Length: 337
Image 1 (cartoon, rainbow, N blue to C red):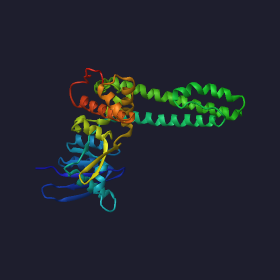
Image 2 (image 1 turned 180 degrees about the vertical axis):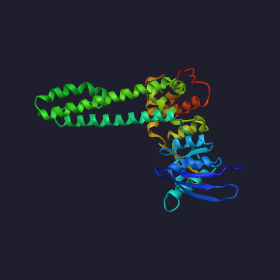
Image 3 (image 1 turned 90 degrees about the horizontal axis):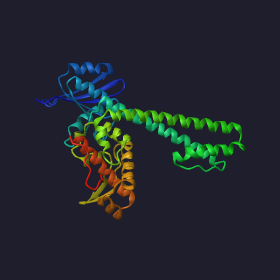
Image 4 (image 1 turned 135 degrees about the vertical axis):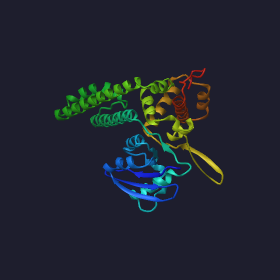
């Protein structure tokens, strides 16, 4: 006997459910308040409950698993084509139920609380990095108005700024110099907050065996390892390393008609934050690492950025292989990825 399929549209206060009985084909539409959801599923026979992978979805999925239900998360991109005409909560619940029945339906691995905690720290660090960039860009632009050209990189900027500020302090109004110093103090305070978050990520890295296994791969460091392990959830959700690379947007975009398919640039689908450190890691492998004959040949045939994307794709597939299988990373005889 097949379990019932329930599409649930989650919200802050009111949840909409679209339940389908596979035996009789009977459809049941329900509207529940937030406080009623767990009580309802506690009385319900074990069912397949599908939700969009959005805010708080992982938490609800963990709770439903504890109640004995088969909780699944589906990508919002897979649900959107089945929302017909008006977009309402009831229409979304029906679309979730319909999308979950498709043969090519793709589900998202349910993350643990520890994995979500690591991702939360990454998000806070990324936010602080944006604040620091905005603050230093403002300082650079303000001093440029008075004839002081400062370097672009953050490390070079931190070395050059004190001398540049001292150089203009004698000829500019004191109210501006004081304001620039306060802005500089905010930059340094933000830098210290970033360092605190990175130390916490380092602690999580030392306590996680999967992160340490992934970090053995050339081009994968602390940030890439922790972000990848936390984002991927269960690596066996993906059938292959290529599927994981496609999920990250590290495969070519395809377009074609009449039987002819053209390979375009990177699809850039998926998580931009996770794709970025993989691209940086691939660039470091090409510039600073031990290059293989494959990379040398690639650089002769293709532009540098294309080679970086290809190595990033290989890094992603290697990470999947390490996480999906029991054995750790084994370097090739040449020492390259």
